[in-house]
Image (cartoon, rainbow, N blue to C red):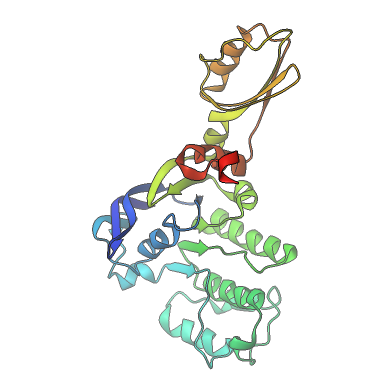
Length: 297
């Protein structure tokens, strides 16, 4: 559905994106993660057609996004820093969206009003951050988007509101085959909602995988030895820690092959434990200036 190929972008001497390639399947939830300054928001602004690429392309359904108003009518974008017209209230913004988006659905609006109980006649500038997010989601979902692009979307929402919003998004993915592209620092939340994940580092996508495949390719091993720890060079070890006779490893590779190799080490115990998305993120970037050592503290 969304294809980014060879995308590069510089701002003066600073290169924000370097030859980025990602593929977002239709009717999926794709999460992009990375440290601050890694290029996530710049990538998003290319996907929604705000920025012009220096090189490369961004297409949705094989159609270029930039300078394509017809295609953009089917894209809803909620940025981290939400902007409304300074003097507008929610009623005025609803009327504006009706004029801009031909697909604006008043029937859905009536269904969403009880879910997002907001004062439609109070200036939006007086709304709290969470209330502005409510208003943004109401407006975005009413245009019946084919593509929903979200940058830190749940920041400012309480747990009940988060659950309501995700329920509405999942409903659109399931019933309308909406494609969702989301950037967030809340990796625990992404782990619950994403089908695919891309990891960015210094303007590059260093890893892109189906989430299940990613979690099957990097995991924890717990081994217990009667005597000293044997040579572990046959394993791709990302992290190693020992407590007494128990060795804790984070390893990368095919799970069945790793277990078979571990079984040859004459261990009294072999436990395989899954890693959270946050742990995977930390270990994948551990060799890229994000590892923590005593010299960093």
